[in-house]
Length: 322
Image (cartoon, helix red, strand yellow):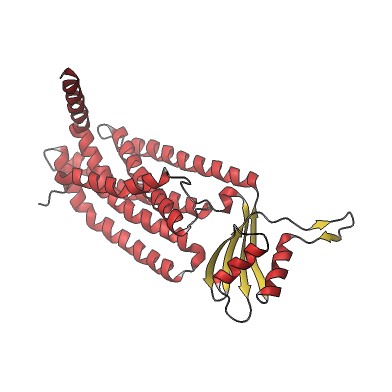
């Protein structure tokens, strides 16, 4: 019988090697490239009629009209996504008449005159107050989700020895997945200017849910096998349970991954970052539920962490004695 559990420290090492580059990137300011939901600003979709418009020509025109910080992405045929600072609204007098046109109208006039006829097909503005609320609420949502998962799993596995360990190991696995997704987007933000927005938080919460679901499938099989007493040691029970569930986990994940790949390739630029976060997270979640969460249970049950810390302490004491 294949012994998966016996190689647990190799799986931990693989996770470490994958996560470390992202963690290093997070320590290099800016940790992430935030979208307008987190920093405030305006975002618009521009569609030009007529000859093809180059992205660099559009960038130069925005610079000329005082928006050198504008981020421009090509999103379709003669269509561009533009993110810039919050635009000033038009000024009106007491009777409602326009006394000074807003920056939005000024941008349309300038682009129409210097590049070609243009339409703003969508426009969004987020104020600094709303942006700070989104940041706070997103942090609270992730924290509450993690706490709820810990409590639920501890309760659901209350009839097995040390149920709290199952909750802690599930949380460790989902933190592994969340940290990997955040680290990947930190690197992509620095290399390719990929931003994180409210959809990124949605993707992160979805990844957390998927990771926990996959972990619970494995844990539930461990619980059943413990009750049946099918193996002599806890390590053997976990290994047997993994062999029983690994096929289901891989088949489920591959089905989702193939669907997400299709969305990433053909779904359009507006959802590409969202789909990419899901792709990274679901692949990571499949790995962590099989090769991290269950292995942490074995390490904890065998008391291996305690022995490791004691050996480290003994070596340090010996070194000081010398």
